[in-house]
Image (cartoon, rainbow, N blue to C red; front, side, top):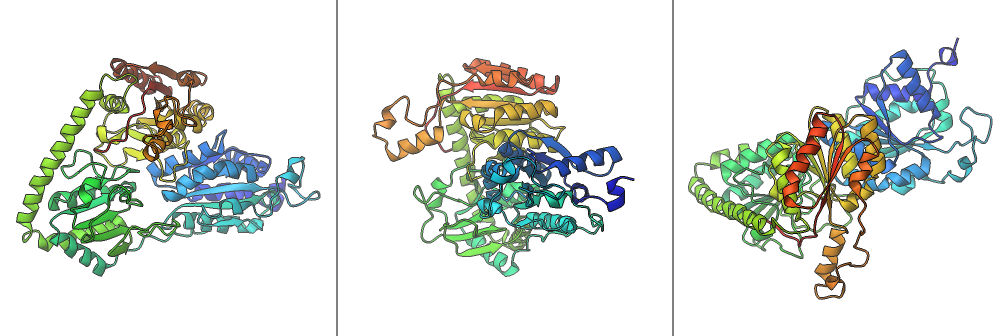
Length: 576
């Protein structure tokens, strides 16, 4: 008789089985000496054919968190991450900041250095177990996560997991952190609680009906209304509802620094990505799931404009300072709010018909002018050397197809590309923690294995993304993703920020700005070759489409990952 048969399953067994029963597909793990019991539990589950998430060994914590993020943004299901005590937690903080700011739910578990120096299963056994202990391990990320807890007893395992997953999924959603001491994981659980009913998360509240009616009245009377959004596209249902509302009422929509596709780019009321040209004359502005609807230093609404904010957390309460004014602040599910707004406006359509028609005609002309300006700009930069990112983005758009998922971290320009379906475009979190794109693309591919996934990243983002671990994971788990590096040999954001503050400064006149240059550039196309992938370097416009087509052929037919390293320039900031 085994020890498990005598004493029952361990806390680690319950942990693994409960995750599977609660719908967690993967544990993205960079394990350490604190997780032998988890590893043993995974092995037992495989041997006994009991439920368990698939364990994915990820050789860097930031990449593991990005993979969990990418899976959830596509699937909607929270995933689990496994970290090694304090050092692994520290490496994961950048990725967790990204997840927190974009409300991505995930369960992050870390081991805890053993309490006991001898005498217990799991007691300290190697020299690092003394140096790795902290007085309060979770303190380093307590401001980032929604909840943290250290497992005290093995019998708490299933209840603690239920609480963790429920809080992670409850709106506003986000990551949670569970610390797992080695002695607790190794202990037997007398009463198996893994099969009990899960703890359901709270759903986003329905918006207040009176507030929606007030918003409808303001929008119905407006001559020059404006809708600004950024993250509405995390809910595909909300995209369709916004498209219908904007079409019926001729409401112009601006996607300001979009984190997802909020409105199809071919929608007649899609007025680009910069609200500045519309703010001064707008008399009613509806802000939908958008943390930064405009940049006050560049442009702001007029004093007479009525400002309405609708989001799950419209005040963005976790932001220490955010001063965007609001005349009407409505909390709740945005898709539900749009349905209610549509119903509240329905009776006003006949009375506003003439005003809607005039607005539609004006906005049709403005959109046509935008498209003409984009086309003219493309022609001006088409033959530049090094290549302009607009040219690279347009070439990629020609080959990607309408169902591909594009994961963008400071690479492609959405304003020059076509996206017509929700869930086809995702950009980095507003937290700005670099190194997200590679892992997010791998996680997206795990969640949607049948779809083409493309990651577009800057050269700095590529290096931050732990490319060697990323390409290892892609090969080990057969994740054929196309990576496109927009390689400008530097930190474009740093250079632009410096030029904006010191346009006549000495640094702005230098070809190699201090602390903003990444030259000589590595041969990134050869990094992927070390993991069996297809790599190419491109320098000319006429090479782009053929290189992308060869890369896609490798991805689709040969099931190999591929990378195209495109030599780009650093363009001036341009808004369309």
